[in-house]
Length: 257
Image (cartoon, rainbow, N blue to C red):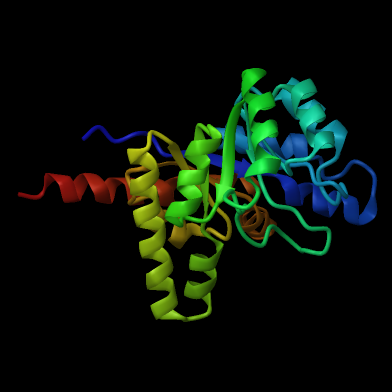
């Protein structure tokens, strides 16, 4: 089996969170994006939220104009965000759930129940030549809904698995892992490109890199947090190395008689 390169998308939302804590322009998320790319990131992810709590409209415009790697624009499936996406024309749009009261994205879209809301947005974005990804849980019904909606990509929400590992809930972590693994296989069998993200650190990224169906990880909060201690370039390099270690484990397994 030919093993696809595992891409690293660096989410720079929380560089903007730090900037917005005091206002002004420092630290600049676009500068962070360029630094992450120089250190080995394959693309940049930014979530323009309805309340603009971190990324702002001008950040999106500058990212599209100034970075030389794909921009993955995370957004809620609203008329306002669709208009911005159609104007910006990013490489890809990842549709995510959004609540004003949440600290961060708490789970995946319910693509089954929200089909009527998602369908026209997916259609408009695809018609404009933008790749569409749905940020969903790994349940079969959600994956099948993504196929029915015509999404080219899914991003599997890994937060429940990561939280269970962090909190020592071993049985739950094992069950969540099996759901992710089976979901990745099912999505690949339907012809979907499979990404994953939320809550990943070096260890969990190395583990999920062992799933050959997954071709991209999108990671942000952990990298920005570690950058306080190590610097952003180093954290990106460490993450790239962890992902590469996981990928190499697949090759070692396949080479065993």
